[in-house]
Image (cartoon, rainbow, N blue to C red; front, side):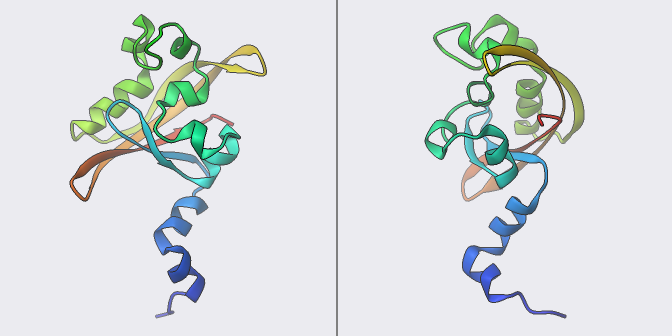
Length: 140
């Protein structure tokens, strides 16, 4: 069996693996607040960590409904039917969600665009905290 190259050990093998994934992957809580994301998500969003971490997904992705109420993502009436939010909540309750189809209206370059997505979620525990791994396919 091969040994791990030194750079994997220095950078953290799991971080390298996370960033090698070609799809946008986020670590979120049950309110879709982003705690981490991989390199593919970072390239897609084109924003710095300051604008992503500790913000809700709809705010970071520029969902049109996130701006409808002062409370932001998850607080507008339309958010009750959001497949991303419902999938994350289902995963937070222990369910595995695989490739649920979703449509989101996102603001891109000042224009509203309808985006077809597939949403996958997997709950996990790290330390004493519960998180959800959120994978969004079709954002690009």
